[in-house]
Length: 262
Image (cartoon, rainbow, N blue to C red; front, side, top):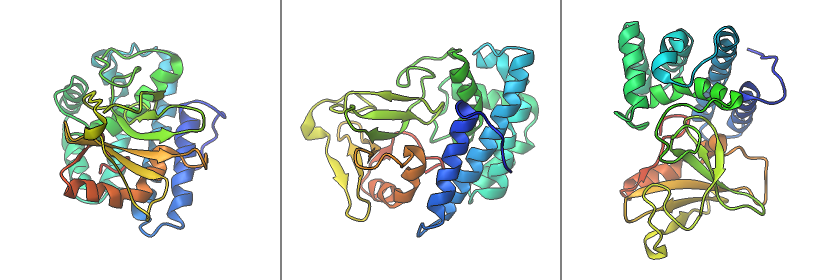
């Protein structure tokens, strides 16, 4: 599908990431995660377009408990895509979600949003809510939720980035916001003892490192964009999934799943 979009805003951002994923897939040793992510981002962009029309008719409040009923029909396009395009067991989980009645589907979103389940436990709810949160962020409507990490929506960072002349930035896996944070502490628990915060890298994936924390056992993948600003962190993250597998073998847990749920 080809979308006609303005040059900025949530739809443009999601489409730009999708195009980057498609480009990387053409030369990737394992193109499937990138192709899946490209399709997911396109679907999320389509959902934003639908939500924009609903917002124009009746403004979303930013209170998920109030907005869920109006947006649920559009959000279900995300598990429809996941059900047909994702690998098992994610596709199986999406099919089960699609069999639920509207009340059950709405409850799942509210449980996730209220902190009853993490993104690792409920990747689908995170993926479904992203278009809604992208729209709220574009409209300047802060959602009602505790903000343990992301200053806009309270979500956790999916990936970090190092840019020229700037501190480490973090990209929210929930709403897509990018913000700066002190690179000398653990994003998950606040640990600041350098001896407990080792970083790991691999020659096979230059410009990518894993910032780990021995205090809480979590890690954040960070991409160095100081030499090349073309990569888009949450998309280019998928070219180094082997590092995530290594981290898992070492007993570390990723803070937030990637675009493909890993």
